Image 1 (cartoon, one colour):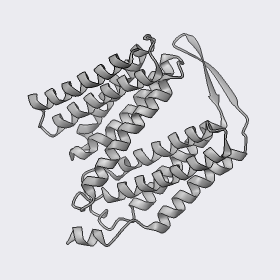
Image 2 (tube, rainbow, N blue to C red):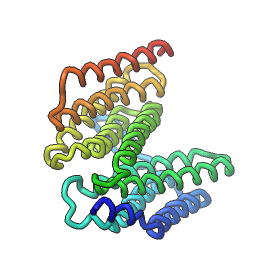
Image 3 (tube, helix red, strand yellow):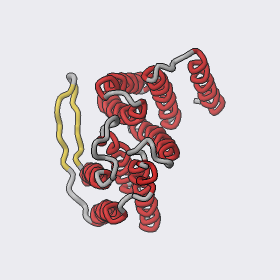
Length: 278
């Protein structure tokens, strides 16, 4: 009965429309208003570090906050949310928030107005579909749960790759790049591992370890002169392996056959990297 009831309670389009309108309006405003840049200088680990506070940084921060707040508003309209146990609802903020922040950053890099408008439209459609998918995964008993969760998983890995490439290509200090990849990987790991239906207390250490290993891997890769695409792909491979091993362990299903499958993926990716050349 719950499943049937859910099928007749789709996402509230009014709330979703307000969220999309606010996010798109924010992107439009920052497109035509140029804010001054502030540079903060400090000492980190015995060497100088500069932090540039720009309009783009403010836009990304604003977009993340609005997306998380709006997603919470939409999801709290779900009829089965009351009395629900299991995956905390705030974990569902991660993908919409990161997608909004990443889109805000990428849009700021587009100089041509026509291409920027097209990007804004794609962003609006993407964030709408993402929030709708998060809404569909509130109840594991819903018919669309498996499809929506698969789409969200694909989005998480895709965003991980894009963020890793963007961070790696900056070639800035490892203190900065490793920290950014650590935070990104930890948050995405928290989202991906949350489907294992275990308590947050048990899941959180695994997400933290995944983030820590990705951060350390970024630090090591910074000493290796490879392209940003190769660096991002290698980080994604490490992330994929860690997530799958942790997920299977949390489900108590880690076996030799699973490890063989993961090893096959590792070999395939490394073969692709070797064929393309470093």
